[in-house]
Amino acid sequence: MKYDRGDTIAALREKAMALPLLPGVYLMRDKSGRIIYVGKAKALKNRVSQYFGSPVGHSEKVRQMVAHVATFDYIVADSEFEALVLECSLIKQHAPKYNILLKDDKGYHYIRISPPPFSRIEVALQKADDGARYIGPYMSSYGIKQAVDEANKVFGLSTCRRTLCYGKKPPRTERPCLNHHIGQCCAPCTGRVTEADYAERVAGALDLLTRGSAAMLPALTREMEEAADRLDFEKAAKLRDRIAAIRRIDARQKVVMSRIKEQDVIAAVRSGGYTCFQVFRFHGGALTDREEWITEDREGEAADRSAFLQQYYLSRAVPPQITVDDLPEDAMLLERWLTESAGRRVRIHCPQKGEQAALVSMCRRNAAQHLADRLGMGGRETAALDELATLLGLSEPPRRIESYDISHTAGEDAVAGMVVFEDGKPKKSDYRRFTIREARGGDDPAAMREVLSRRLAEYREHQGEPGFGELPDLILLDGGEAQVQAVLPVLQEAGLAKLPLFGLVKDGHHRTRAVATNGGELAVQSHRAAYSLVSALQEEVHRYAIGFHRQKRSKKIATSLTSIEGVGATRATELLRRFGSVKAVAAATEEELLTVKGITRPVAKAIVAHFREDE
Image (cartoon, rainbow, N blue to C red; front, side, top):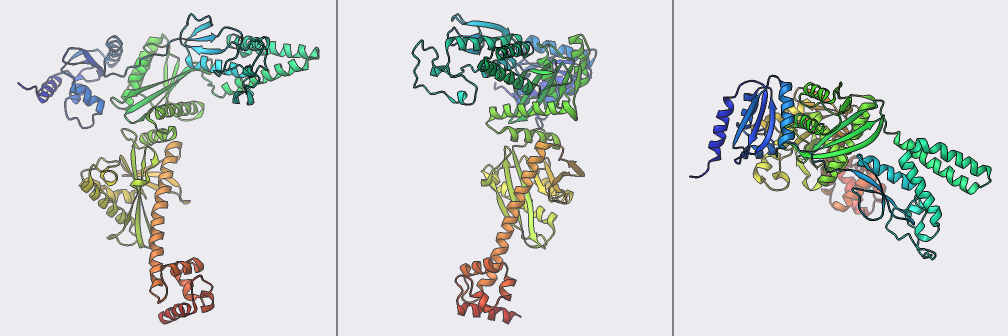
């Protein structure tokens, strides 16, 4: 008998409809009985039955999970909070395949000092029996890598792969690399530095790494003053430069500071079916560590944020404040769970302005860049698309955006332009132009309706092919609510009522002011990345449409001149270039016409006669 997946789904739905309307946890199992997903619900019947109903609205990952479900179990809880605690415990215990799993492969890090002479200081993931000295372990990979890098720069230690140990005869022909020329390396590869001097530099770098700048600066200052008193000005100058370099490092590190001494800042960016969570960890008000995690989209933005926070803090210390770029699902329940886990009050905070909002914005930019590197996109575009999706309430960032604009002169020679942005960048091969055929001159909403009708007709004819055969994830119209209302029926008739459609509203200076919706406007200027993207779209489609209109109008004007005997396309172009318009050509005298390249006396007389005849 052939296995029928449809019968299994029907049986699972029937079982789900019999569940109680109580809070609890459900466990999805595959045909081998293994738990592949754990979830919580306020009402078990409502939540679980959604999986086995219509797949419309399900993400691809949810559809994959449902396709592997053979049966499910459930546990009724006394409250939503108890269900949350139980869900976290079961996820930690079973590590289900379709839950967001954060595999911590960071491990510990060590500072490695290679054997002398000319030792190198670098970061190592583990100790080795290689004769080197190791300091550590350290938990923060970000902090230790940054500290080693800065110590090497301050003391001019070599970080390249060149051979440094030459004994008494260094190769004088070796040229120093760029690091030496920018003051970040003392160039031991050229023999300019003795073993003793280099060993002193290494000792200073290790002192900085182990004691820190606060303890080291007073000692260096005293040493500099003593050298100056001995009239050893060369050494005093070197110490002065090191002190200045250490202070510059401190100044750079203080750029990323927080009034709140202990907190985590978390931001997420979505694109291409993935979400990147960036975590900045602050200790003593300073950024001490950062982590990034890329997960596949599962149940929606708010639910995925909630799942990330649950799993992230299962194995990490919980700070007093967790600052986020958007609130997760069941934020109050999460706060209570985190508070009980930490044994003290924990707050989940979503700032709107000020220092904390700036930190969230920086965290979000880093998440966008990390995800962009993974997807082969630009960090700025990834951040802008994610911010635009949040602003417009889209389920995910739009990969393909089409924007339309109408251009005409007092209703004459009306045309339209369509530009396409993919992954936040122009895709000029998919740009299209339209000549308005039916809409009355000056009726922009009617013209927009005509253009979108023709565009969707092209989609039906070329479906699946590049260009017109692709549907956009977002349509932006140059204009306000009138244009949106004119086009909505076109989408409904085509069965595309759910396709996101918005207008771009300009201010008195022809700059993007807001995004028009079906029934209102959304201010966009406070969303910097999204504003830059929609402004670029609006400027590009305006440029493209008006360029087509001018080209069409110029051709029409040139045609009016080529009707004169002896005036062809080349002479008409030269006349317009010289006089600027047909009206100016008509007012020109015969002598003025003769100054134009290619115009002879008979042709000049014919032009004058033509316009006098018209008068």
